[in-house]
Image (cartoon, rainbow, N blue to C red; front, side, top):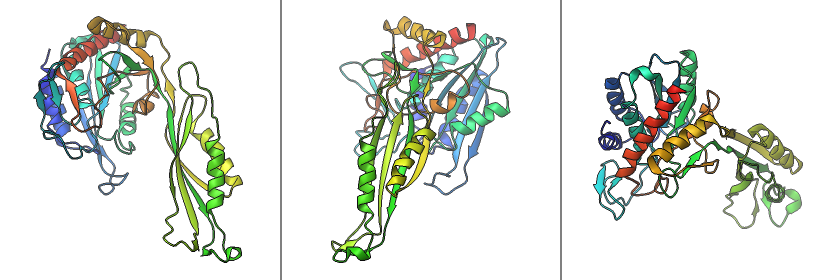
Length: 381
């Protein structure tokens, strides 16, 4: 099997703070082409740096086999900013010993350059004639996700490259490699609330209109909502008020505007639209405006052949069966689920987005073997 540790180091060494472009994609392309993949790269977005419309690079690579089946590996090469205080350079991969075995340090080690390295190593161990394998790789998963995987889906549909199954390499394991896979995710909608009034002197309230009580009343009603009690596969939906702002520097002035923000993570009993309508109706009664932004809808890949395939591969290499779960935040699987059944499985998530992010060197080799087993089983099914 191709040296997965070397592949991971090469990817980590290419800085790729979201939105990622350039060198890190060069590195992945150089890994895939010798394995027989045709690599397509394109940039979507034309706005200024730092904006939601900033240019994003995407990569779709495909190796067409004689078998009728097609499995895709999906993920992202962009990473969150490393921050300060690393023991070594965030983009200078370094191996250090630990009581449990050697660790590879670097931003993206687990989220998710390490997993992409495992995917590359895995497909090197799968016969090219077994069937079709593709890579769906974006540089915009950690950012707005407007010009990343959604653009790749447009490309796949335009070129008739839709896979039969898709495995996303997000870090899903919790305590040890293999203990959890994600068969679904909750949806996400964020909403910005604005109550407008009329500025005035606090001693003359009849000449002003204070928007704060209306905003507070709306937030109290929203905070009291019980959206549901959960389902067989999903935890209860939750609404959280995440910001309140007035920005009034004067103690004797009634402000003209008050704002708040809320976030809802929701299960498949709801949709982004239905929740937006519910919140809008409550706010309308309190004369508060709402601007909702739906980040993604919930999805579920019900337990069946695909999850059994993943479970069998994991158990063969680790001796444990992964727990099927829908916990955690969102991922780009929320877009890919419109193309084919999707499951997420990857490395331990304990250090993702943290300073000194690290992956166990031994886990890279095991995950590569798991991915190879899944690919072979998917192409034989």
